[in-house]
Picture 1: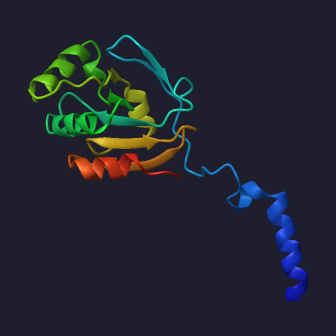
Picture 2 (picture 1 turned 90 degrees about the horizontal axis):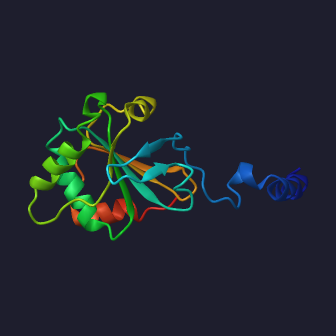
Amino acid sequence: MRSIFTPIALCLMLILPGCLGGDDGEDGESFPDFSLTGDDGKEYSKDSLEGEKYIIHISASWCPRCFKTMHNISAALDGEIYLIISSDEGDEGNIQLWHNKVNESNYSNDLEAPFAVLPDLASTLEIDAMPTIFLISAKGNIIDKHEGDLTIHSEILEFYNQEL
């Protein structure tokens, strides 16, 4: 019986590679579609970022303890895409004020990361902790999700350097 099973299993692996962890290499959950305009005036969407690995940081202006995480992630990344998104629709119209407040909380460096408000995304993701940080693959899949502060340089790099 075992001698018959082995060739059948090998044939199935060749025919059905996606079902058995085949060549596509990414099995993570797909990040929801989104589209936003950052306070830098640029448009960002899941489609426009395809091919790029990036971080989405869900926060809100009422979370000043999140500021340190924002500054440390920004400082640890070297030009990688980092989007800061408010889950609070009350932040609409005050996004630049929030960005300025974050910058003023750390005089050593200003955040170059774009800020935006997108409460529907936070709702879709069922965010219940601030901050919540997502690492998204170049194919738009969630590599990892981190809830809470992320301020230690080595831990930020370890988080960012993960692959699916």
